[in-house]
Image (cartoon, rainbow, N blue to C red):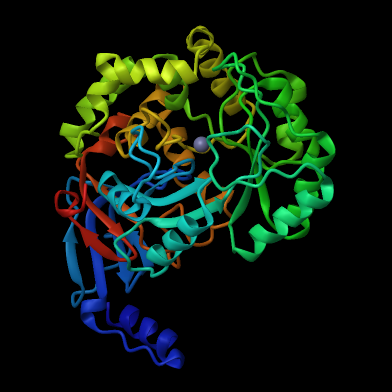
Length: 440
Ligand SMILES: [Zn+2]
């Protein structure tokens, strides 16, 4: 025990950081679930400041006695969740949202990392500032800032709409200067949801975006839920898909392109359930507000009673197509996972009817319903997510040296994924939170 403490003091001494006992926490007696490895019973997890400094079992080392002890007996510890497609809106019809307050609300449902593909420059900057400190009571924040899309795409406020390769390069350089974590592009005529088709970006513009982004060491993620359009983006070299493929079964060519690019697949099953039947989807999310202690969105009754649903269907008027293709979407997730392609969890929260917090917990279940094992779903929401943003040395598992972002659960999520809702404590940057006391 003393040796461990001494070792840490010596390691940090050159930086002039004195380790006090109150900076040290130890979680004892829990089962540790790192989804990439085997569960570890009777674990000892030492946290110093905001980092995990030691992981072992009670059999291999003794917990430091001068640390603050968190009793984990009978509990399960897993890395914090990452929602890698979350627009930080409440899912209502209001476009103006307090994205910073909404980011904070994600912590209570176990989300310690958020990736937002599409928001304004001002919001991006605000969110980065709010989440900058390791110990801030917000999830860590990553995002693309404004997306790069086409004229006529009304859902992407503040986005870039280049029409030539030179304009495309300029847009990427502007985003690089904004310090974005990745680039988001749109390649979708929206046929799967609407009869009012959007134009598709010219291939030379698309290619120029990907080439310039890669030159600037930025990955490119695409909104492209239809097979042939997604293949166009993959041929240009994109690094991942921000939605599952809904129109056709994925084929060998698609899988080969995804593998060639080492791309990730974010299925957003809930978003498609929502478009297919917004009223039914709203109702399906409702029980989660009670269980998670969330506020019901003000718009809930509008979606379920008809007025909101009608408004939604006046924009998205091909929802029957979406409904008819949900089976294709689910089968595609299984095919992509079986091909060994990394799946990453994301929800499209903030889109009309995809409610903040509830949708994230429900997405985990939808992935299991589509045929994934709970352990694969946990991987999608932790280590695979960290890899997607190049943060896997810092995040995504409970290992010495990584950020202390973790959940203490009352039940085992490997047995039943719904255990992820049963959050006893959230730890973010080494700070312990009771979810009932967090903003919800
Ligand atoms: Zn989205």
